[in-house]
Amino acid sequence: MIEILKIGFISISLLDIIDFALLFVFFFWLYKLLKDTVAVQILFVLVILILLTFISELISLRAINWLLKAVMSVWLLAFIILFQPELRRVLLRLSNLPILRFFLRTNLTQTIDEVISAVKEMSENHIGGLIIFMRSQNLEMNIDTGVPIGAQVSRDLILSIFNPKSPLHDGAILIDGSTILYAKCILPLSTVTKLDGRLLGTRHRAALGLTEQTDALVLVVSEETGWISLAESGHLLFNISKNKIEGILSEKLS
Image (cartoon, rainbow, N blue to C red):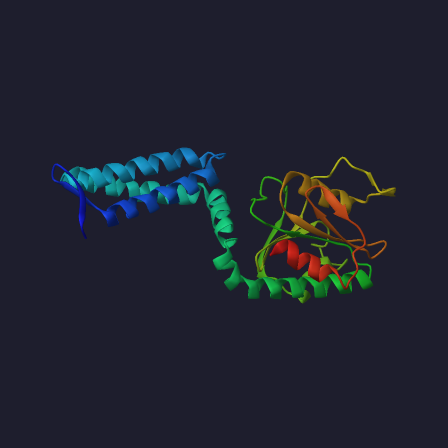
């Protein structure tokens, strides 16, 4: 590679400049994602450690370089363990990139098909339910309880959870991608008790309450009317036609 600049014994080529530029863009993007969290402070320390390691290797300080690499390995592991929610947020943002969404489309379509199939049956049989679709925000701080499920989304599993005789039927299920993470989740209730002249039940207020605080999407099936409703950004769309709900859900999630 053609040398562009030389400072003392350090030579810099065009490839080096591109390499550093890409690294800078990556860390800047990571900083923007984490800037409102505690994890950004740890990120700064990690960047400093990387720079010191690079410099010590460049000027052949072998003992210091070995020590820095050992410390950085432990620091990186601690970062991953302590800041799982923030890293999850980064990975979710990555999954929304167009190039990756193409590969994820099949799983999303299958998840929506399974949910819609279950919701339609619940609606016909007046079985109440709350189904949360997690987007970019982590919801652990907004959900008080939940029974870990960790199973792939399926029509039969959703119907089993919301069966009135099931101990898990009260509360909501939380879906992340194609996985049901939790069932029996208790959500924050909205202060809104009446909407469009209708008194809101607990499920609808819970759906509103969560979407007022997060970017989650929440499907509601009314036990009394069998209506299928959708909550997003503190707004509630009542009584969606069974023929339209799949299209609306696909559009909002993809």
